[in-house]
Length: 478
Image (cartoon, rainbow, N blue to C red; front, side, top):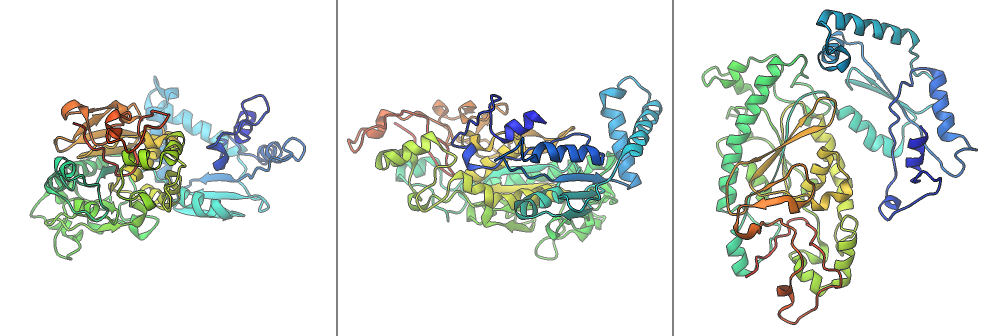
């Protein structure tokens, strides 16, 4: 408890606050995960966190979260997971382990006291968020935490994310000295990526359907916390996989495309930005899947600097560029956004992704996907500006045992711009490109003398690697 309070107060253990630039800009939320199952225990927590003497000048809000489960099927599935995976039962027979677990649960129930004090702030979750009860929950808690708790589920659905397909060829863009515009359409490479993406998703999603047939418990695909979380009837938890895979059965015709006629071969919730190159990446002519286009997924707004490259900005606006290098997450483009702004508009997107019980595909752009990848990797979002997102590559995130997400990377189309990134590293310097000189579009490269050969400027005093910003494309050097 004391360690958590010191962290909330941003202290280094000496009792003195040690604020940093980043820490001053955000609130802190601590999760005290303990057996606070009695009224006396919860009263102790309140006293420790809100005592006017101990916590003078350090106001701290307390919200209790109680999970209640009386669904027999859910309980049995949870018990079986515990028996099969807990190190406590590693060398026990299944029946003996289950008996021991049930004995523990009975003793826990005898001492348990539910929350019934309506003067306290609390959230009660019933049967894995199928029902919720909230009391004295306001502001950010009501706006963000409650929807998140409603969205989180124990389903094993995979989440796929990828960049929008390529527009102009890299050499063509370099010869014409063109930057990327927001309204560009897919080029030849982009259309090839679109086609192989459909094949890849079909293999992955049908594999998901096969595996869920063997799972101890899977959420019904007909359920969800909003209309966008409800899958069509053709893919419910009781459907026969053989009927999905059969071309002549017809059962899968219940899940049809946006034309109202075409049967779709696999379930998938597709989300895209409003940029043409993004939604065109999932506009499969023969498979008209519904696409949820969201401006929330649009790339970082560069304001007055839209269309300009970072190398040019380092010369034309050196003071701003130095701020960018020093604080890439919170430095805002004039008249535009900073990465910190993306957090606000991606909050609802994350909730929508989390609440899905079937496969999800998100097609967006570098800046947005960097923030999402930081979320799924559970890494500091302030460091997301150095996460590499290679072209023609799909990142797959699957719920892992014990929490979190397991990540795999799939290069589905080889091209001069393809690269492979070390998944254990957050920094794009770990990218190994297959093109000449490892000059991939997303590689962070030091400032070079060639940038100033025209005499129009001088290098900034700090010679730093360029941060990755949005759809920034580095012009190749001679």
